[in-house]
Length: 490
Image (cartoon, rainbow, N blue to C red; front, side):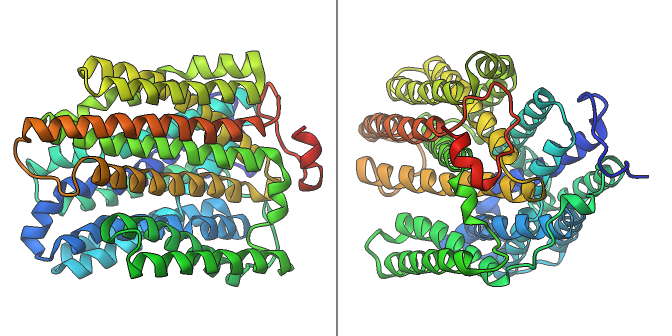
């Protein structure tokens, strides 16, 4: 029997069932972002298709996932967060089983697009629900930290887990395993997560026009970045998609300003907390995606490491995310959100700057840079995630989590596109297989130095500007009404 609506837990241990279920749901949706990347050559041989088709195997998931986040958060705040999450888990598990019937690349791409839709119904809700499991602010921060570590672990370990499974099983098992995980997570959500109360939901009509425009805006914007890397920034396709994204954004803003019940209440952005946390989260994701993309090329191409070795080389990122918890809590307790987040932004920039030096050294130097960067990353991400959800009205927490996830998805797309473009310009547009010649390795390292230096400056500024708009609160009890938010941010 599910817990009583409105019930909260007094410790992480007491909430282990819902926490484990929500973490499992978050893990499976994040690992699916990168899990199939290692299997693309095998899938290509099995199903046929060209390079562009294989790129869409992963791209279809990320585009539908990113495009539907805001719409999913809006739906959950109206029809029930637990209910929408359970529907998302059910669809995710059942569609994953459909891989057994896939016989062509186009069918797999369509299946991945539907999986992205289901994941979008899960991502903002898992973060919103874990926030609402606790009244105690320190427990909220620790729970969201746990979610972040699990999510990042899934994203980073996807290629490693995929490579390990692929060595022993057909590639279809990379998706089949989603079904039992989704089932276990759904049971944990049912028995451990309290149902939504009527008072905790918004009863405004669903803004279908706003939802469609938000999907178009985010989807086209993310694809414009992908198209720029693949076809060139001045290609007709890239320019056309970019124009479509801008037009959709303009129409979305116009619609939300005039709608009686907007999907996204734009007045929420009067709050410095909402505005600043979203900006800072974009910066953290640019850094994370940029570093991961560049280091995958560094380890596997320049150094010739195997996918498993490259996956293990990212462990400092995950371990630091786990063990940096006391540092983040101390910074918040000692300095408050604004200064603690600013310190995190400085550490993030320092880590990226150190990475610019480390790429020509050895793995130990890169690992040290990872640790410095991740302490800052961990601090900014946690403070902004907790503050952003906490700053939303009680009946819009899923929208707050969706804003957080959307900011991170946009940052991830920007970071990946930026690194891909910079490497093509500074090093090589085509990544040759086999052992790289010393001249190419040296050119690649110089390109990385420029890349990480630019990232250090850009991300430091983005995250720092976002941090300066937060409150000076020493806890996470931020629930300003939209009309009062400007005063609260001062």
